[in-house]
Image (cartoon, rainbow, N blue to C red; front, side, top):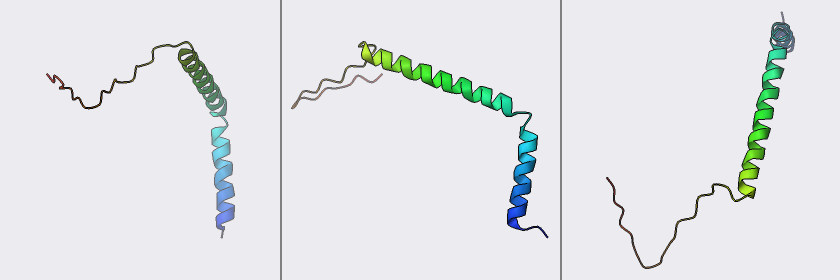
Length: 71
């Protein structure tokens, strides 16, 4: 009989053999995702650095309340 260790190794070998066909596509997709994340991070950093579209903080006045007009 096979033990847990032998079954695990056998399962890993089977998965590796079946995944060899898809491995280049997976690596290519991971590279694209990394490039997209890197460019988005850089764009976000550039927007924050040049005073881009930042939302102003709300103005708070102590002792007064404001009514909201809710439609």
